[in-house]
Image 1 (cartoon, rainbow, N blue to C red):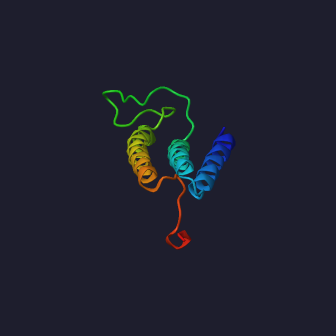
Image 2 (image 1 turned 90 degrees about the horizontal axis):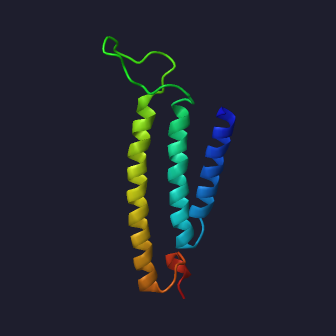
Image 3 (image 1 turned 90 degrees about the vertical axis):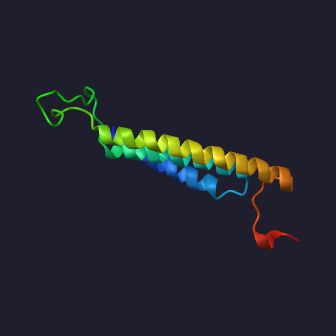
Length: 114
């Protein structure tokens, strides 16, 4: 399962970077979406693939017993979901406004203008 997860993370990062380098702003939005999912999956896989009970600590213990899932990567993923959603919303509004102003969704450099 670890091999499949790491291959999936690598493929998501590769496809996200490919889309981020494209000249279309719609591809840029999809690249941001994929890189957010890849980061979430990377954090999840760094926490370990544990199919176990939820990390509920008994009242007489200070840490969960072995075999329970680690709650820290789950909390980090929840935070990353919120951050990636806000970045995606801002980027989509920015792209929409740029399309209205310039009339195209293509990203050009300063030297590319005639």
